[in-house]
Length: 395
Ligand SMILES: Nc1ncnc2c1ncn2[C@@H]1O[C@H](COP(=O)(O)OP(=O)(O)O)[C@@H](O)[C@H]1O
Ligand SMILES: [Mg+2]
Image 1 (tube, helix red, strand yellow):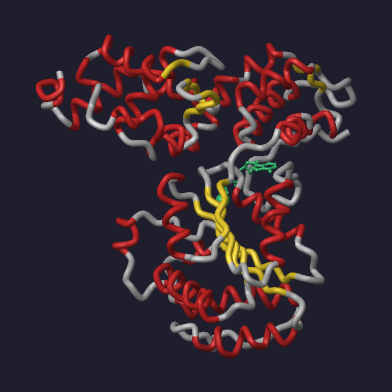
Image 2 (tube, rainbow, N blue to C red; image 1 turned 120 degrees about the horizontal axis):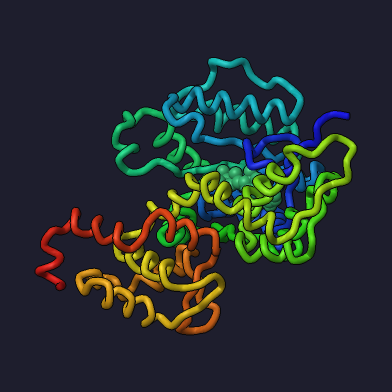
């Protein structure tokens, strides 16, 4: 018998064996929007690795082919090429979805004239009045302003953004679904202002039954058995975050199944096996967690580090608690803006506020990661590096 296969797959997102769980309500909301001719865009934003690409691909699979022609495209892969080349690639994807060759390559100009005036009308003629072209643009706006400045203005990133915006304003037939991985706080506003009619929604954790199904995948493929308490433990740690739950299960699976003989009964996973997989999970999740951490301000880092160091798993404490920790540690840690940090951390989904005034970590794995990688002392050193006068100013 072949070696058992780890069913927990964390990428690339197009992996054919990857299964999609949950988000039913969001999918229905999106599809209702796309069926409405007055809606031409949907924006899905959220943290890196929360499942935006997975959701976009699921929309593509779910849309009825009688009513829609969904086209998945990741402009990020084309950021440095001229617009004409990007549109030629996009048209290839459309042609492939339609199963016909519409135009010869090389006819696409860098102003998008051929694409808008010739190519799209041909597509509309082929799909008929009742079928809607839906562009699924993944990671629509991902470059930092500095990266953007480094690009010559003629390259696709600027040109593509501008072109799509113009297309949205002048052609009401296609619909657009965008995902964006930018920081949660400024994005919703930005997008709503830019794309007036956009439906905007944040992508966050999975619902409980979906999380449980994601975890129990290895039972479905006959390679593991979980006790109910083990499943509960994983949910406590990963909090419905599909990627972190997937990473934790991946490690549990590796540790439990690596040495099982083929044809032996599936090993049982208890809370102990989950606990034993924690260190490896934090290491595997390092890049995704560092991304969240790097997106926070210094005030947020200070407050989050203070909390991570002093609250227990699942514990919620009054806002003042974090400030008390700072005061007892070093008064200069109470930097300007620190009073806003708890709220900002909730907006970023680092903290949670289940009851007015009481804060705790949204995802316990992230609390552990901060405690391990960014203790308060280290954050204090960072503050001193940035602002050696802080001691005098605020101390
Ligand atoms: N709904 C879901 N069902 C199953 N796995 C998911 C789901 N959402 C995310 N994942 C897991 O999380 C990983 C990261 O998701 P991805 O869509 O690439 O995130 P993003 O595009 O937001 O960075 C996926 O490879 C997959 O393992
Ligand atoms: Mg993605």
